[in-house]
Image 1: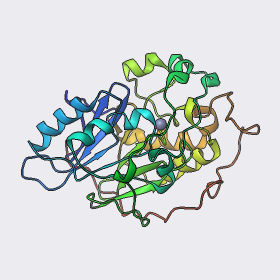
Image 2 (image 1 turned 90 degrees about the vertical axis):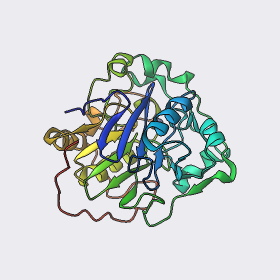
Image 3 (image 1 turned 60 degrees about the horizontal axis):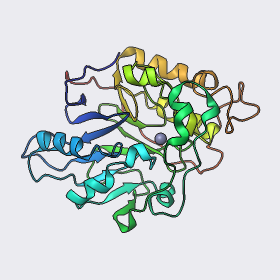
Length: 300
Ligand SMILES: [Zn+2]
């Protein structure tokens, strides 16, 4: 079910490449080639991955072709780590959901990760992860309200809070490509063994750092309704194929068992069998997404 790695990232569509930076993925969205149009970087990996990201950008788009902008699914350390370095080379704006801006403008810190959720070594070590917000100043901008993404024609951002207050996913209806960020992921991120082997698995957001489970569940349900044909998440190898939808539906119907940890300071007391909220409890509903009929993916 996983998509083959070609050595310098994984092609999830002809114009979408997913690249792993140690433990977190970034995506390059835009037609490859030196004469193409604009391209966009989605997320900015772990600290120190700037040279790797710039090298792949150079090979894919040519010299002196910075992205039009960088879009963040959210502001956790492993998705913004190379931002400072990348912005030294690429003087480009950064876009995120307006509810994520306090964490990107130095006004708020994320809660400290919860090492008691279980699941493995990475969860136990999660208190070592930086939870401080960063300050991008006026480089960071709010995504337009209607769901369009600047420099990404055909894509929409989907509001998927829960893992963080302003988390977004990105979806292109024409070929049903979904970049899910950490709303759901394709590896058991709590386990160092699973992460090292990149064992493919559909899982909820990283448990040690998801403070609002009812909202996270609502968000997963919204994404599964889109019936993605291929998914590149913030962690794990991209996935596609007929198994994908079945396993995503299982994730929604069995979310409490598959995604939610058995214990932890954010686990609701009455979690078992709780219905999916009609609207996320802490936020207003985002605009609906219109999904056209399924069209087959071109071979890649
Ligand atoms: Zn995260």
